[in-house]
Image (cartoon, rainbow, N blue to C red; front, top):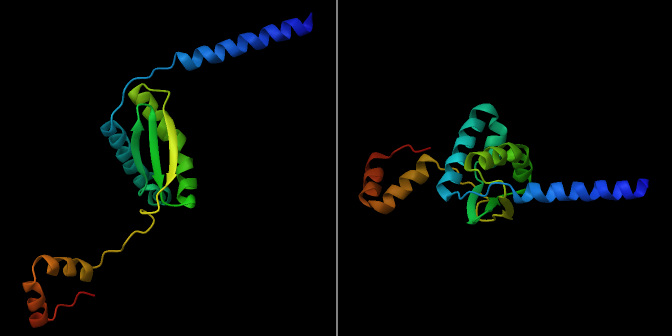
Length: 146
């Protein structure tokens, strides 16, 4: 008798889980919605926790499908820091766009791994490419761009 009741309880639990997955809202969201919320999260992180902000500021979030978000991350250590805020971000985003069936696809982004430090000399060299007369001016004036 007890085994029959336990089986019946298990079947009821399975039905409740299936109903919950089917009844979740699946509204449409756009790439703009995603980018606006991500930029808002970055601004909040910048004031709240600069360490995590610096780790995740190079992440790229892209809408890959109707209910799929592709996340390009530069390194595994940065992904660990992102995992600390991912739950908060995606819970907020899913609630905001009324779509609770969003799936996340993580991909390593090797192009975004290196961040170049831009110095005054490098900026000046880019300007020289656009206007070669600046090189003559530099030779004449001996600018200190260190």
